[in-house]
Figure 1 (tube, protein in one colour):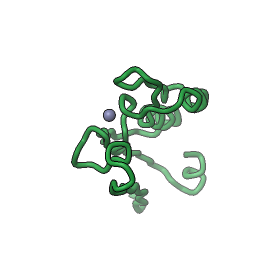
Figure 2 (cartoon, protein in one colour):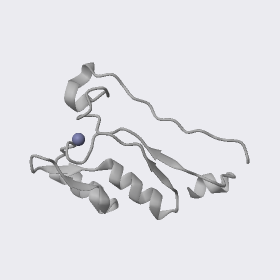
Figure 3 (cartoon, helix red, strand yellow):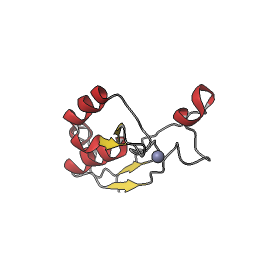
Figure 4 (tube, protein in one colour):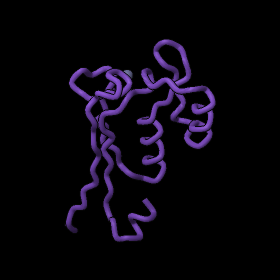
Length: 106
Ligand SMILES: [Zn+2]
């Protein structure tokens, strides 16, 4: 956000789109600890009781901390059969993309 503001951004809004949710994103405990040390909101527990990460919660927390409004368009890619999921489908899964849009001054 600081860099974007320095480059002239005046209004920044973020959309958090589809991603694997914290109930589905199992990770090793050491990785969870490393990520949660930087962004505590990322720590989660999977629906089957193992260490997890909630990447969306971590991203939303970081954006909110710097005053960026967040539009939550998230759905769990693993739980939504109409979305690509490497965790659900393996290497044959399709790929998703993100985007950044620059709008002219208003
Ligand atoms: Zn999920």
